[in-house]
Length: 376
Image (cartoon, rainbow, N blue to C red; front, side, top):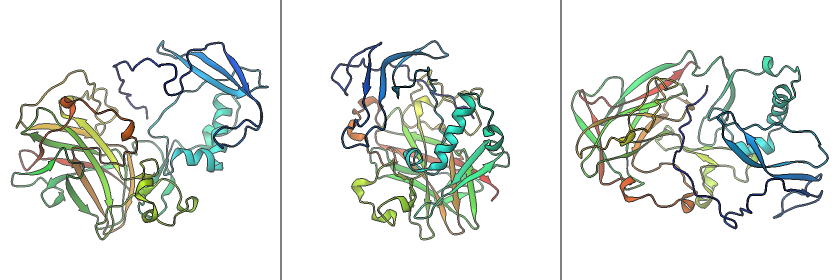
């Protein structure tokens, strides 16, 4: 399903020669890396590779991209350019593992190229399911991959709204008004709402949080929601993005803290929204569970006023055994492992959270989470 890409309108800085290895704009320049060439201990090239620098590529919206093209030096034909991105194009493994270690992925990719780039009449379209999904098990258990569905979102999905209570998630709103509070400036502070499954359950698709929130200390809020899985003892679990057999460890617990990154460990699906950008366009939303925020207006909040936030959350695919739980955690800081923080500039003060955030619960403010249940 196509996703409405939210475009960044602020121009990035112009590249500078010598910064990040940028060597300047050199259209028309060509050079060849000879067979056997290697750098930084990488595998040596098996053939001569030609590099055409800053080749102009016109895309359908009128923009021009300039890319360096690498190809075998003795290949004279023009080659097609594909620029594609999809947040639904991955399974339970990190993409680099598939690229280098999964022979089936390589075979299927070549069949795709043969069909759509070379026009070969193979059976790619007839033999490839429209939708394949993975159900993560979390912990040291391997995911269940290649679950075939007829469409996405899955037609048989039952979207169940579960309401926030002080003591967890329930099927109806709380009778009495109350609030849950967390420190928005503290990365370890969050409000958690848990539900334990009585039977084996599968959640696949688009979750959404509906939160009624306020802040006494500031005129805006950056709100983060993560869906964590917990085992039968209540311990929060993570998913390893590689098969354990392909790693030097036998358990996630053996991975040193310094080597834990979001590229190898998945903590759960995340949703993010700045309260002043809460407006969304239902007509442009691909699904009621995935609100499209045009970011055309900024609506600051009067301190203490309660606002309704509809927060789309990354598509999920999780299995739960009886006795396992889902934990809806709301916080003021990014709740995943962020290994790139050293490369990120500090945000300006007016964009930062301040003080406590309050989640309002009860008949007037029925804060909830909507989860996508599918048949097993």
